[in-house]
Image 1 (cartoon, rainbow over the protein chains, first blue to last red):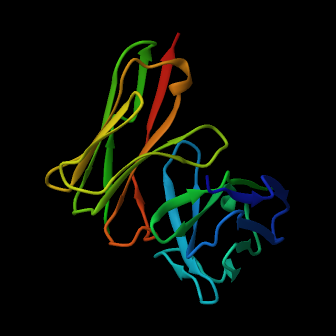
Image 2 (cartoon, rainbow over the protein chains, first blue to last red):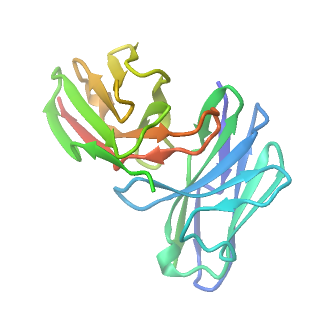
Image 3 (cartoon, rainbow over the protein chains, first blue to last red):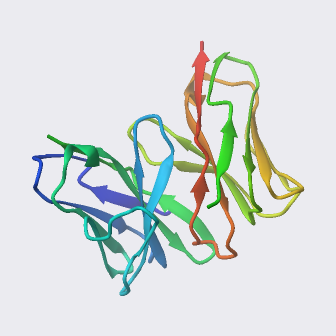
Length: 114
Length: 113
C-alpha cells in the first residue's frame, strides 16, 4: 500500500527557533498534501492544503507567516514552524492525496517547544 | 463551517462486546470515512463510504452512510484488546478523492480483557 513518511518523528526545540518537518510520499506521486495539527486527546485540525508548485491554502485562523509550507515536488512537502513558542507544541500530521484514492496519513511529528 | 459531532466521546467495554459509534453533520457530505488512530501514530483508514445508504464491512467492522448524507455509524463486533484506540469519522463535501476532510472529535475505545 501507499506509504507516507514524516521526518523527524520527534523534535524538541527552544522557544524562538524554527523547525522544519518533512512529509514524503514514498511510492506514489501526491496530487495534494495536507497538514494537520492535533492536541492531546483532540481531533485533527486541518491547517493547510498544498499542491505542488503553488502556494498553500491556509485554513481560517492559521498564520501563514508562522507556518510556512513548501511543496517542491509531487513527493515532498515541508512545514516550517517559525519562531516557535511553547503553545506551538503539538502533534503535526501530514497526509497525501491522489486522484482516485483516499488520503494516506503520515505517522506524525511530535513537536515540543521549551 | 462544517462541523461533525461524534459520539460517544469514550467507551469502556469488555472483550467480546459489540461497539457502536456515530457521527452527525450540520451539512451534507459526499463521502464518509472512518479512521483508527493509535497513540503516537497517524490515522489509518478503516472504511470508506461513497453513496447514501451504503453499508460496508471490513472484517468485524461495519459502517453505513446515512440516507440523509448527514450521518454515519461504525459498528465493531466481538471486540478484542487490539481494537483499543481512537476512532474518527471524517466527511468530505467535495467531489474529488483528494479534497479536504472534516474530522469528528473522536471516540476513545478501551477494551478490557
